Amino acid sequence: MRVGRAVWQDVRFQLRHGFYLAYVFVCAVYVLILHSLPESWRETTLTALLFSDPSTLGYFFIGGLILLERGQNLFDNLFVTPLRVREYLLGKVISLAGLSAVTAVCIELFSFGPGLRVGPLLVGVVLSSAFFTLLGISVAVRTRTVNQFLLTSPMILTLFFVPLLETFQLWQSPWLYLLPGKGSLILIGGAFAPLSLQEALPAVGMLAIWTGGAWWYAKHSFERYVILKIGGGVR
Image (cartoon, rainbow, N blue to C red):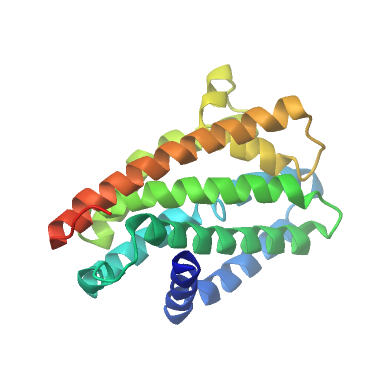
């Protein structure tokens, strides 16, 4: 029940600060760009686009949200309530994964129509969004300003974007399968071609392992850099 309330409060907070309105505009721009491309480029471009934006939007949005909530001193009162850290984090992950999923499906539908396979695309986008949101939390709680967060981010995100080199046929390596981005690209690419279990299961498994590790690290980071600094106990 508390998780549901946390999700609803996050959605209201995001609406109030214009996150959803901004992404309506972003979706429209992406659809226009895709329609302007030659048809032979559109599949690869959409795969890369859905990975690099809807899948990772949680990273940048959560950075802004954490710093905004800290600037408004919301943390001082938030954890006086029965809300636990894991419920707070889960609320953020669910609300932003929902936004990512809706954005990805809208871009796909308005760019290619209803004929694509939405299932694997949604699994890839939602799991990737969860991972990058948790990663963004771990970074945001260690920074004090938006500029500091943005300056730190490229050094951290570059590794996770390396699999895009294979998407554009610039570099290939079996080691890429150890990165969450490779699993995400495989699943998003499943919108265009059917995936076998030998392809889908390792992709989902690797994403799930990275997301589990990111959950532990985000919770540990939040407790250390937020809860303990406002004088609360770990919950």
